[in-house]
Image (cartoon, rainbow, N blue to C red; front, side, top):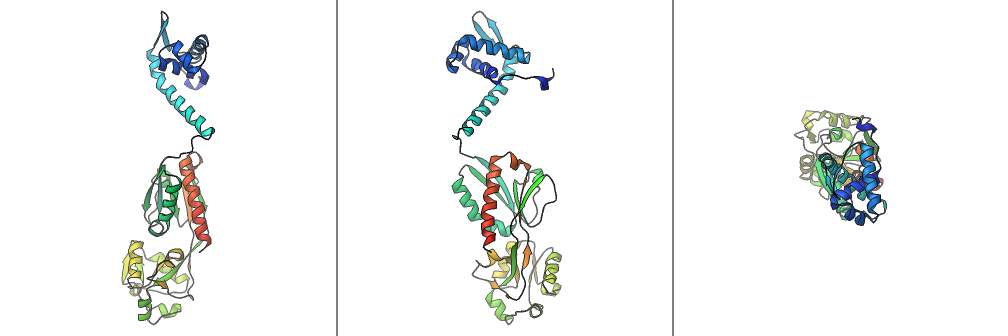
Length: 300
């Protein structure tokens, strides 16, 4: 049978479903507020449309056939979907429920997102959030996350990405550490200072070079793969580290190393997969993050 060619009237399918649920044409007719003869014609019409016998007529009663039993579950799902559609269309279904997985860098996940996610939960109590805090990128195409906040533009056409205003990151240190090295102001004065490095330090050193700081391995007595450990060492006075301005300016244990040193410029993208177009839950969280993060970045 060529199932692609089958077409049927939903009213006929509903008549079949209610008749099977109620157990008789008379009970189904009362449930649907129609006549028994109308309902019988609709069931017969569905049988002709799909070419399957749904009921055996025994005397004045009906007994559902094995084929009918097989199909009833599909029609039940259609009925439930139609009911949800009707509720949503009439505005009576305002609750959005389910889980959304968000991936973000450690700094964003620890310092930036918690108050935003708390606010989201207050607005949408039916949504639960899984937060992945990692500087490694989650693969959205494999659904390792639903939404990712990244510092580079994705290059896959099947991802949807919107760019936020560029963020600024500065060098920070504890006041005690800066006092111990004579409060340097210029890049040349900083070239003998201790810096907190990263496990993959080459991009960091390259970024330093671009703003005029020439550093080598002797400048990095500490390295770590974890930005939170990096930041903890900075707060403890172990050396100089880097952090986004929005986060650094809210930490009382540190201060900017110097206003004469240019900031690092960081792109920030909010990325998701194509399910954004059809999944209301993901769309709601994505739009919420875009609005909240845009407001934050405007004031930094």
